[in-house]
Length: 439
Image (cartoon, rainbow, N blue to C red):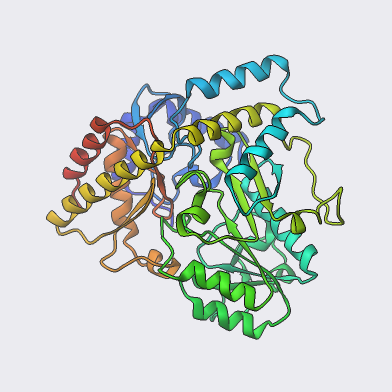
């Protein structure tokens, strides 16, 4: 929903003059003025901010305003912006060249590191984005099983490949419908939509499509309808159902991988998938994706097997240097995860107490260093309950925090990401600003 609230527009003009000028320029040559739709502020209203620099937990826009950052490049900046060790690795590699189109030792180092951390991954293929990782994992699953259909969940986002841009039909057993022009209906016919946290809907789909489903792909902790954790037994149930029906289970850990714990959701909930996709943190802020799994499956990829996947910049040495350095720091300092969780829990508890004192309906979901404030008086456990939250309240909340130097994701359906660079005074400032929020 596009918001055109007068108060948002006025505050934009007063505070963000240089961003407004840049947005006007951008709209002339860039569709919508942005290179990824959520950046346009369409769902919250107002003018998108253009950033100039960032360090640690803070970003600075072109008007010179400082923000405590809870986007962190949508997750990768777990160590904070412009981490010294990561920057040094990038600079050192850039001096040797930014790309070769040939293998490098960085790729081997990265693959060995990932496989040493993740028990379910024997082999890993590097790509350039989370979208590419999920698209390739599904292709591999289809090639490995010889089946065409896939199951995904309403509200889970796996990138913008055709097979993922499908919305639910009128019931769990209906075919999906394309929710973007340009996606053929024939593609939608092979994508089946289940309800997140609802094992019965999954079982019904599997029973109705017996022997036809190649894989089930899921965000094991959802992050694209706001943060929504799996219900008790949900992931274990998916593992069991996939085993019963000879279906590959794909965990999309583009957001959660190496963020919630070093081993991601598989470690946190002790459930192993057949294939796992990664992105964000493994690039240290540069464009990187990956997918991996057991050798039996991964050996079906070209050049060893018949399933084709390729990429000119896959395994880019600068990106590998940034990602390898980030993962190495996280591996050597596991206390980072403990501290991040403590910070997120403190923030969630503080915001909850403030909103309760104001009698503002809300539900706060938090897992590790991911959290979301849903303005709903009911638990938010799936896409339907997320949609029923009060979006207008979130929009006011977003702009109140933004104007007071706190940068949240500009959508009620996006997760907040915390960074290790946050200090106690940052958290206290957030809580102080929330105290001034009024509906």
